[in-house]
Length: 75
Image (cartoon, rainbow, N blue to C red):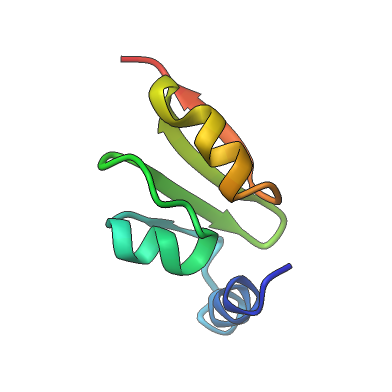
C-alpha cells in the first residue's frame, strides 16, 4: 500500500469517518497514480480503495493503478 493512501486512511480513522470520495485529476493522481479520465473518482474506506472510471480508461487504470479495485462506470 502506498504511503499516501496509508496516511489518508489514518486521517479517516482519527476523524471517525467511514470513507471519502476524491475527485479532481491532481488529487486522483496523487493518491493512485492514475493519469486519465476527467470524470474519474476514488472511493476510499478502511478496507477498500476503488477507482471509478469509464470504459475508455479501464485498461489505462489497470496499468497505472494495479492495487486499486477498478469500477467501470456506464454512461
